[in-house]
Figure (tube, rainbow, N blue to C red):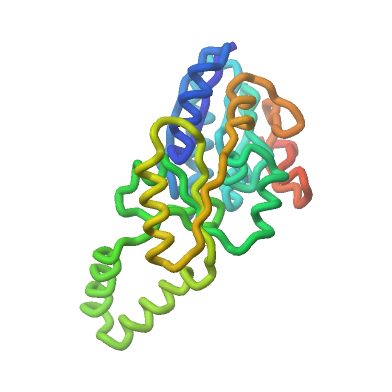
Length: 248
């Protein structure tokens, strides 16, 4: 079978590894992380990639979750579209919805993974609404200077306080180790950032089981299969997503 995999580059290394070990021929299309911050834009991009899948592909697999609703509304055209039943890519890193639910019961967590840190270009992306990565002090000062020039000192200080409020919601930083390549530098960077923010730090063992199944064609109950003509919708239950008739 020939698969066309569409993925976020925050799971780049695991996806490439699982594709290399798949018994199928897998063509890969990567999108940059953080696009879920504008769900409608990401939805448009994903639909465009689905519509433009190679003619030889027999199925399309998405290494995405619901991602803030970004995948809600995508449609399968002439090929099945398969994706994990996941709120966001944290589930893809942890390998199971049950582990995701367990982690969500813990203190609000700032998540780190090697792929994001390796590709850090100063952009603070987000994973499932939970921030990943952070602004450097130099970037913060640059933003403040811009606000001072536009709005004055007092207004700039107020805006910086409001925009920086996200940090107060977190008490824990977690690095998910996927065991792909040398992660030591990334772990050290995440730990240093946690220390700087005053957050507890924890290293968590990840799992590629969902990504492995996705790219092997082992599509069990943890996957949603959209048949041609079906559209993805939120299910508002433990299934997370469901298939409904397409809009044509």
